[in-house]
Length: 448
Image (tube, rainbow, N blue to C red; front, top):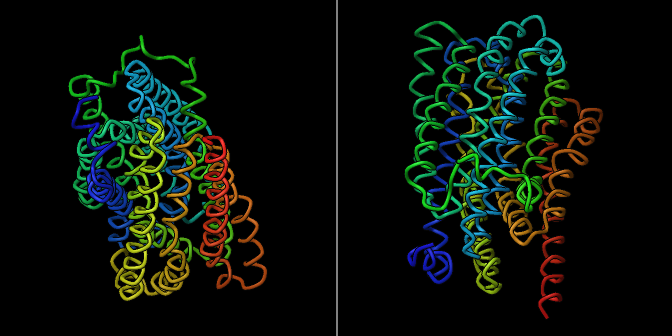
C-alpha cells in the first residue's frame, strides 16, 4: 500500500476521506439504479402492462443473483480492507481469486437451474397465462448471463476495497451505458420486448466483466485472479462468506418477500403487479443513494478497525450517518412532490399509474432513515460482528416483512399490504441502533 493510500485511509480529514470514497460509490449506486430502471422503463415504452408485469415477476431472479454477488463482493471487500490495513498482500490476492471463481461457479449453477426448471420457477413467482410467455423469454436470456452478472457486481466491491473507487465506478458505468444503449434497440428496434431487455442486461454485464478482468490482470498491484491464489482455507471462505452473509441473506429474503408480495398482488390483477415493479425500481433511487454512501465508506471502516484506530472509526461512522439522513430526507421530499410524473415516466397506463402512485407513497415513508440501517450493518461487519448484521437482514426481509405482508393484506387488503416494507424498515432501524450500541460497548470492554 502506497503513502497516498495510507493518507486517505488513515489520516485524511474525515469529511474529505468520506467524500473521496463515498462519491464514486454513490455514483456507482446511482448507475446501478439507472441500470435496473432501464429494463422496466424501455419495456414500459411498449405500452403493454403485461410485459411490464412479466419483468416485475422475474425481478426475484436478479435479486438472487445479487445475493451471491453481494455476499462475495461485500465479504471480499471487508476481508480485503482489513488485509490492506495489515499490509497482507497475499491475503488480498486470495480474496480476489476466490470471489472470481466462486462467482463463476455459482453463476453456472444458477443458469442450469433456471434453464432446467423454468416452468415451475415462473409458476411459483406468480406468472399466469397472460404473462408466462413474456416472463419465459426474459428468464431464458438472463440465465446464461448469470456468471457475468454475479462476477462483475462482486468485483466492483473488491476493487473499491483498495481505494480504487473511480475504477469500480467505471466498470459499473460500462455495463449500465451498454444496457441503456442496447435496450431500445433490442426491445423496440428488433421487437424482442421483455426478452430484449434481458439480452441487453447480459451483454452489458459481459462488457463490465471484460473491464474488471483487465483491471485485475493489468492494473491492480494488490489483487490477482490467478488460480494459484484460489483457496478456501486460511479463513478465506469463512471470512468472506460470514462477512458478506448479512447482505446475501438480505438479498435472498428480499427475493422471497418479492415473490410473496407478487403472489398476493396478482390476486388483485396484473396492473398492481406491473405497478409494484415500477415502484421497486423508482424507490431504489432513495435507497441506493444511502446504500452507496454506506458501502463507500466500508473500506475506511475496515482499514481503521484493522489498524486499531477505533476513534477514527467512530467519527467516520457518525459523520456518514448524518449524511445519510440528510440525503434521505431530501430525496424523499423530491419523490413525494413528483410522484405521479415519476410513475408516468415508465408507462402511460392510467390503471398502473393509479396503483403506482399509492404504492410509491407507502414505500417512501422509510426513505429518510433507511441509511442508518445500512451504516449500522456495515459497522457490524467491519468489526467482525457479522451475526448481528445477519440477524437484522433476516428480520427485515424475512421474519418481520413476510408475516406483516399477510397480516396487512388480511386487515386492509391491497391498501394495507403496500405499507409492509416501510413498517418493517422502521423496526429494523430501531433494532440496528440497539444492537450497534451493544456491539460498541462490547468492543470497548474488550479493549480495556
